[in-house]
Length: 321
Ligand SMILES: NC(=O)c1ccc[n+]([C@@H]2O[C@H](COP(=O)([O-])OP(=O)(O)OC[C@H]3O[C@@H](n4cnc5c(N)ncnc54)[C@H](OP(=O)(O)O)[C@@H]3O)[C@@H](O)[C@H]2O)c1
Image (cartoon, rainbow, N blue to C red):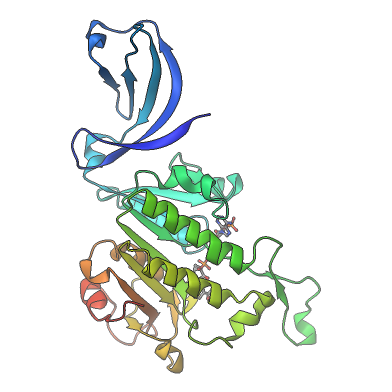
């Protein structure tokens, strides 16, 4: 079976992903007398190590980026078919001058949903090994995975009352928001990823928050545990605790940052998913965003000034957790 490792690239600018396998070359050019040989096309290179018997048994198929890509930042967004994740993935693709985008989704169906490109990896964050290929060679990781509660069948809005929710077996917040996020953080740290942006939720300071009783999942408790794990990891991080998410246009509201759920006591406690997605990407650009945790919401449209200066926004944050 193929294994994946990282090797330093010719310059120290970046790294390349290598997939070890056995290939026996029978027709190699004269220059094959050197110890190592590299034959590169636009994106694939073969690096062969010569054995004493003159056969090339131990070879590696090396997937490299083009030279132009080396100056860019390779960024993986997980939960890339989710409602916020797919906005991040799209924005990264649109900014191909600066980023090499990757997405991680759970199923082939999700991959198709966001276009099915080769840069979309399929893996389950609860299974650590399954996400390693997506994380190799990354500069930054944006975590947008989350356990998703399902509504119990039989709810009839016309009869009033509230719907009941449940989590599927094995997909409780403990497994997804704790173990799954931890697996991503561990894999990223092991791969030398330079920054991790984690999207969480406001409300985590209150153990009795109604979201915790949803489906008996304690979702905010497990999210918070993962946030703490990230903050303790030593990897530069940005923790974004979003207010209530809305599927609205982004870029047209003034964003507001806070700490310790203080914004929940105000009228400013919702935010467009598109704005959260933008903040995730902007966090990669400014030192002011590193080693910070922020609550994030926006003023209502038409009040305040739409946020354009993200450096100044991040500079307002003083909290590491
Ligand atoms: N809803 C709110 O009002 C609110 C408020 C504050 C913060 N937040 C948080 O903000 C974040 C983004 O929310 P959202 O509504 O945009 O997210 P979402 O649409 O619910 O997306 C979550 C993604 O996680 C993926 N996922 C779940 N389990 C996985 C697994 N085992 N392996 C790989 N992927 C897995 C899902 O994949 P599948 O598509 O395959 O299921 C889905 O794409 C979440 O952390 C959420 O909790 C939400």
